[in-house]
Every structure is written in C-alpha cells, then in structure tokens.
Image (cartoon, rainbow, N blue to C red; front, top):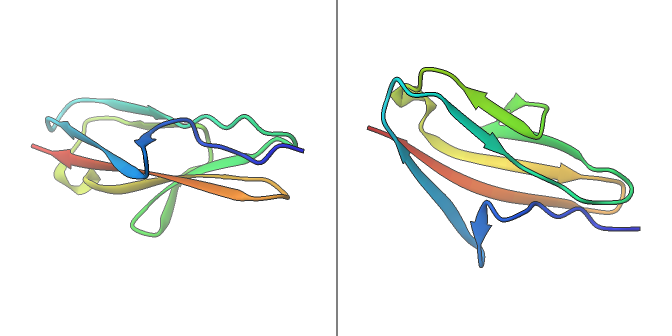
Length: 88
C-alpha cells in the first residue's frame, strides 16, 4: 500500500502563499499518488468547496481570500496541504 501524498503546494512545512488581483480566474490542482487511490477534496473556512483534484475559482473577489486546504485520504492515511490566498 502507498500512503497518499499531496504534491508540493507547500514547501518544507511552510504553506504556499499566492496573491492575485480581484476579477481574475484561478485554478489550483492538488495531486495524490497513492494505492489505494485517495479521495481528494478542498476546504475553505471549514467548508468543502470542491470534491476534485482541481479547484476552479472564477472572477476572484476578496471573499475568496483565505486558507485553502487540500485533503488526500485513503484507508491508510490522510495528508493535508495548505495554500494561502490573498486578493488585491
């Protein structure tokens, strides 16, 4: 079995930070390479915002800012990666 791993949206335990202008579109991808296959989902403010490896946000607004977490879970383990988004 393989334990899920989320591929580098963070480096050495430090959350990845991203600054974008309002009105733009954003696509974030979180990969997991595990056996058995992991379920991947994204959260923002403790709410699930996507049940996919890809999180698409159209027409960014300040309300889209925050800490996004990508979860990759299978029957052996759960891995979490954090991405901080700021909107200007």
